[in-house]
Image (cartoon, rainbow, N blue to C red; front, side, top):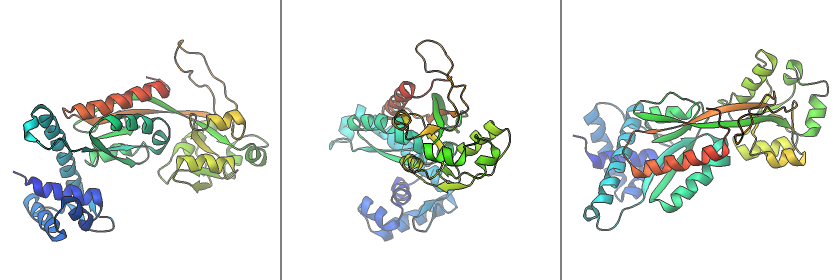
Length: 315
């Protein structure tokens, strides 16, 4: 049987990033936190925390943290049905989730904000590329994630959300300077592009589809969706932007698509599918732990409703 005081100490260290902050959160001394984790590591026979700035969980540590989160969900459900178990009233429950930056900057934040305003939760949102957020689930760091992977992680369900539509765009001056003779492999190999991080492959994917081959792109790295827009308007480079994030700039003409947009008709009442080489649709999925929890179900419903109202429905 695992000692849940030790598990709580482990989760606190991983969440807070240090033994000192974990001790303050748990209302104990740092030595007590250290002793609990050492006993837990002896119990499971492996290291659970990599000491550093910040402290990070090992693979085994992440799985135990996920176990703690699921147990807390179950306890919350039990206390809701048996109030005598918690005479002081239910405390807010931590819900760790992962999401890509562009979803967070557009449709995801309003959805979870509305949910958290009415639910007894504290959301702990991690940001990563949509191709990599599923790794947070597999490693046990989060209970739910917006991801580009349709295949559910072990112990999780996967539900389609729709597609984020990206537009390859730049300022009119940038287009005149770098693409006066057209957007081709030679011009793209010279013109500075914008990427979110070294994990960001959107620009590379769009160029490969446009040119039929890989092109090595000169890149500025800007780890912010909003900074992408500001930098593009200023003429720093071209990039793939969420269409909903740059709608005003496209309408005002401060950003223009790199290649013409041509839209095709679809079923009435749905958003048009693109035939434009300027656009790239990235399907997204909501994966969440298979835990019986009204809170997790409520979060999922809020996320799914917002996605269906704002994303391109390609499924």
